[in-house]
Image (cartoon, rainbow, N blue to C red; front, side):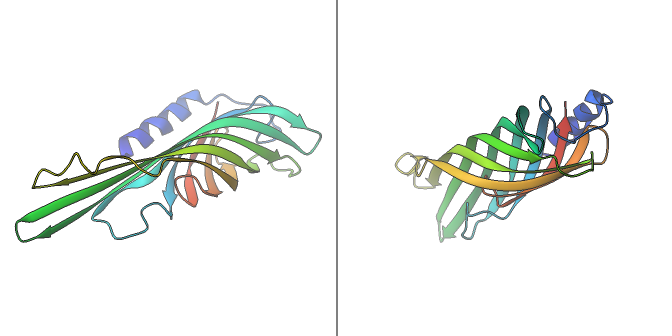
Length: 190
């Protein structure tokens, strides 16, 4: 996880190209963001171990919305996994849940702020939420209780902001429902 974030951060620094002063997000702007989630309705019970919620996002400013903003289109991929182990006497069992969320997003980026480092946005995401579940115990009952359970389409509203502390590198926070309720991370303007 740390290696992936380090590589993405270094790639963002290498992509660094000075840009003319203006709004933080304009028509034609492209952004890739990687985040770690905090809080989620996924796995809302006791677990033995978990993989933190991670997400990867891409968006491009497509339409100018008058003088007040830009509308973007993009994609989203999120992942969270956890497992629960139990034992009693000689019996041992492990259940694993892996959630993958793939989505199409569109956001309105407000341009009414006279700060070229701040990007405030809100939007909608249509997604497909994939749940892979597996169960294994030391009696050999793994095949009976594995598969895709509860996979479904979803829609969410989200709001967020990015602050560019470097010309093309920003910290971001986003509230909504993807793989988590709060997503924090780094965004790279291409």
